[in-house]
Length: 494
Image 1 (cartoon, rainbow, N blue to C red):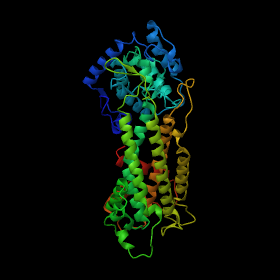
Image 2: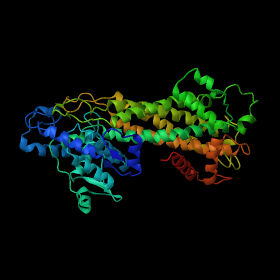
Image 3: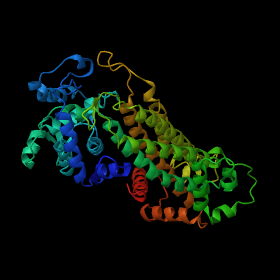
Image 4: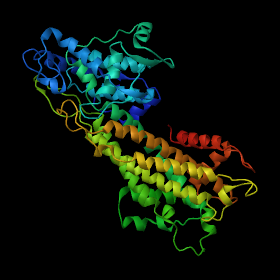
């Protein structure tokens, strides 16, 4: 992965975060950073520049003497490392570090190339700062969590390395890496920006997009297992309401169900209409799909943006603005959280239809043995219901809140960091509900044999059949669930 400040994708972020892809800085970017640094140094003593020779936040009117400029940068890192709570997952911290490095590569921060190089060194050696989850309000940058990363860069605090938490100084000494010595503005530049929320968000969106395609196949399997009709997926219906996602889902469902013997077996049934959780999959999943693509577009603008303050331009102008404000991410995090929560609601209702003896012609709760003596998969609907309901609480919009900080200087904040953290939890719940539906749809399909489904569904069925054992009485089904989730992630290349 080559950083240049302009071409980072959410897939890149995921690959560096979760697959440990190596990172480099484009040579032309190093030259650009040197030029930007000279522009700052040529003017930093003759002008009053926020964060270079002034205090921070409401203390911006306090001038700092030239001989204390470097001390100022260390002080802001130490004082702002005020996060609390459980450490963020190391993979997510890697995502945050990558995005901060890429943003700095744009050259609007006036920092030396060595700052970005040290972040890259940490990534490539898998030295991961311990970053508490809580503490950012998502406005003047993700200050507290990013300060914990900066703290490690200057050789202080703690890091995860070699599978355990260790003092940063010990790890750097072991690897022969020098702690970063901060020059003017560099502490502030490491702390400013939306990298914390953007890192979590990017990983969330990539996982969701990849698993979403699997969710369409799973939904199609449920439709066939429940003897649903393909008529609602007729493309003429969706051309009459031409939302792109809706048409895409309808086409994909038809492709998955094409040639189904199960469908042909009940063409002459007396059912007039299917329930909404079967009939309106294109409308609901289509809206979610459009949401995913929109959120991804917003994020890929954000992770290739300069979110520092002030921004340093080629002529030496240092302009204080508000690019650190997390509102663009906060709003789309809430948008996607709501979309996934509603999609999970639909999945949970299909899960109920797969096991509820009042709603299908399958064995009660998909029990293979003696009913009554065995409960089958009854409780997996309970689990899905619990997860779906938990999401409903988490989906309350974080961006609807604001609270003033820094003595009313920073009097409107985005709460985007909490929005991203909530989304991460929702994605985890959503993926587990998807795995439950996949497992139960597979078990339901077993009762439809020897009739075959569509080719795409049969491919998934055979994959499940190859890794799941048959049974004729109750047993612990937790390993089956883990296997189902693992299979879906493997198919999605996660």
